[in-house]
Image (cartoon, rainbow, N blue to C red):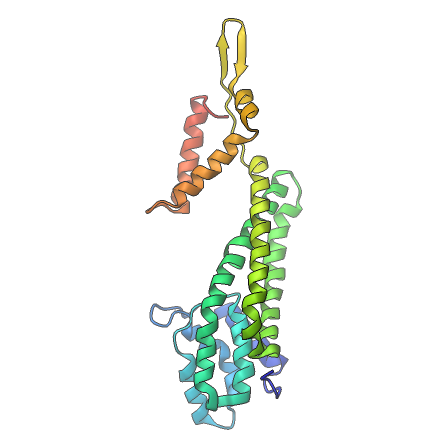
Length: 269
């Protein structure tokens, strides 16, 4: 481990975490992206590490004003590693410090965007929506509880892991996070697939009549494959989202117009 000394105690680490949590992306710009927010977040640690060397503090600040961009959640790992390394090697390892940031922000962005930007939101959002539709009040609370408390606690835990493991985390993060991401992806696909027939409601009310014979079209479709229409409807939405110039807002508008029109015509119910 790199953190031989404990210059950045828990009080300092909490300040770094809160700065990133509250203001990490407030200074976002096209040149440095999250660079200024990262440097601002690191300032409590830098001031403590270089409190007796103003020139070294100034050099460290410039070093941390470089380009930086990754998923805000997983950036906490980089902040933790950064503090552990910086307090040990200081300005003698400024190139290594910059390399650690550059080397970690790409892989952690891929993992973080998938895990926190898609999988967790999709799984928990689907479960919460289904519980709310069933009249369970926990459906309204689960999202707030998990987002406000659970994910926030996880973000702080990642900063602590990064700090305590130091540069050792670089060697372990790719294999461990890859397994977590793969497991979460499988869970997400399973949950979303199972929720399609329960949340998406699409039926054909038309009844085919020939003389005395009556055949509900929906029964014919169910005999081919139960819940076929909800699945096809979801596939259509995903296909629309993949098209150039299409975004989620336009797809939502399309769904509303589509549902009203086809319900008015009696094609779907």
